[in-house]
Image (cartoon, rainbow, N blue to C red):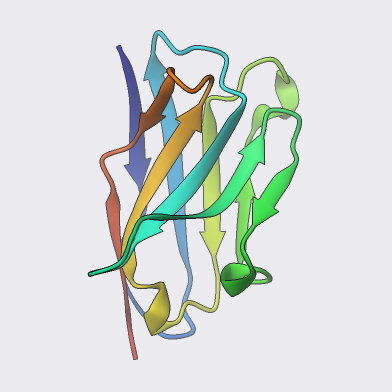
Length: 121
């Protein structure tokens, strides 16, 4: 069984920073990519950042320049098991539940339990 464990959410004032981490455990497949989605109240879950096994990143415009995704995959490019999302200059509109996602195939993809990020103005 595969589990994605997230950590690092919380409450921060506007302009502050938070770091989210996601680690996969269990009998994990060879993930092609990992990323973060977020879901604000009353809105759909949306992809905001992702990183592939070979280090390519995708970042949506609303968080570009403020959010950075990275892994410690430098030692082993075969397996993507964890990632870190550094979030700087957080704004109230970044308030949401953040979900880690790991993708191997359309059938084998997994979600974390979600972590709340709240930014006060």
